Image 1 (cartoon, rainbow, N blue to C red):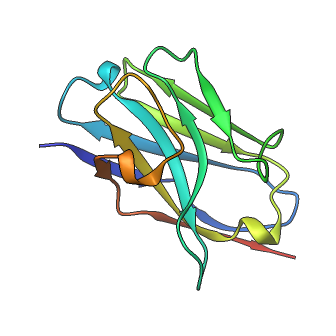
Image 2 (cartoon, one colour; image 1 turned 60 degrees about the vertical axis):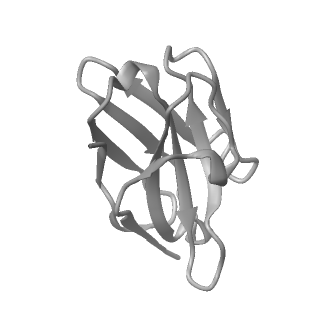
Length: 124
């Protein structure tokens, strides 16, 4: 059974940094494409970033490009999201997602497993 557990959220001020972590357990982690999504109050869940199984292919939403960095440590079964220069509009619940494919995607419907989410709140 696949399980994803996020951590690292919190309350910060605009301009601060946070690093989210997602620990994966279950099928072979290296075969999974991983992604981060977020959901702000009253809004739909949206794509933030993805990373391929081999750390080769990454992609970011325009709203976070240049500020966020996704990475993964396959030895630790963990994917990270380094978030710098945070803005109030980054406030959301951040979710880790896994896809049983080596090909990542920004399509939310194609991810098979989800974590419970971690709250990130950025004050102005």
